[in-house]
Amino acid sequence: MFTVVAYQVANTINIKSSKQQLQWELLFQDSDELFFSNSKDKYIYLFHYGMVSFFNLSPSERDTVLKQIKPFCEGYLEETISEEVKVEIKPVTLQVNFESIVLPDTNSEMIRLVMLNASQSVALDRFSKITEDLLVETNEHTKYLENKGKLDISGNKLKRFIGKVLNIKNKISENLYIFDSPEITWEDEKLNKLNQELKKVFDLQDRYHLIHDRIEIIKENLELFKDIMDHRESSRLEWIIIILILVEVVDMFIIKLL
Image (cartoon, rainbow, N blue to C red; front, side, top):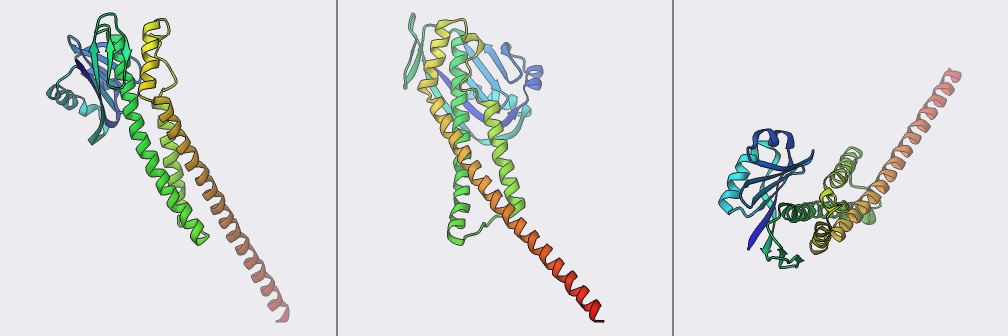
């Protein structure tokens, strides 16, 4: 029995620097990912969006690797989010269960798919927590609006809040490819089947839709807040113009009297 462990260790990992400095055997690379073997049947998978996944590494070995990649991390997280998956090897068997994943052999591409989906699952956990917190904060403003008939947030703070939500939405779009299949699955039926079954077991698509729906709800609320803010600002400008006109009229009246 082997173990896949995926960690969210940072906001981002510098893939270019990692490739140049880390001395393990590189099996796969693109602009966002590096897949290494550091010894027989032991694999390490790095992702640009701060994820690290391990296959068949002991806790002490994982700690050593995390120390090695820390210099390439931006926004290192002291409290890591993780997920663990058991992988069993049985000849001529390919099976994906909730308890464990059964592979016919230690095929590196099959293992990479397991590590990829486990990493996406951890990333979803992180974004789910972030969007949940944002939704709670948004609901506090809507409750205040309901009770007081006005907003309790300034224009500058609202703009920062909108920017925060948009940045999170962009990160989700850039880093989570739940609906895309890796190129290795396009021409290999077994790999494609494994990838699809992994997505189902990790419930990636439904969890992604939940996060996306939360973002849309938050965006709708923020657009309403912005409209209310714009209307309030417009009303303020109208009153300023009215007062200026009245001052001008009064000034002209006084000049005529004099």
